[in-house]
Length: 268
Image (cartoon, rainbow, N blue to C red; front, side, top):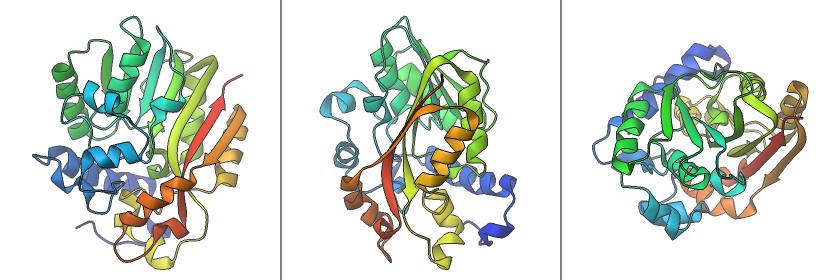
């Protein structure tokens, strides 16, 4: 059990530790069966859960078992408009599911890089890359606030329910802006906060690791994206996400406070 400590008293390093420990546990679970306790997971049926997020049968069939852990809140590859030969960066790539879908979209002349701060997840993703027989996907250990990427080398950035986990979201967007080429785009799925959390949710470390209490508002996200230089900023809530968000907590209806959204922006 993650130790309890009020959010206001946690340092950024402590927040990262809470998240890293939780996802290390998920990565090392033999069959992935406990990823659906209180995290970003809505159903014991993984395929049904994945379809609910916006993936189709072709997506499920194209990736070998073990890459999809059911941890997202949308389908970022569906909104990114990826094209042959592009370089794609996945923030918080987990076991690699979205990276492998992106690799299919950009083809063998493209490149997909997944960044994750949990060593166990990076190891699992690299094993999955071998099983999926793709050689234009690579996984790097790193924090999304300090990306292990050179300036101006990426065409598109995707992410699936990860930015909410960061203790410094504006820094995440600064780094995204830095590594994107001019004209490059950000296309992510994430949860946004629509109402203040009760104290017991805001201060719960389990809620932080479960993609809940770290969510920002639309106004905050728009302000951070604009401050670092992005334009064409668009944040679109997905009302149909309420059905799976309601299942994230057995004791309360989190859809009263959260909605999954499509977050898009472009580097001029």
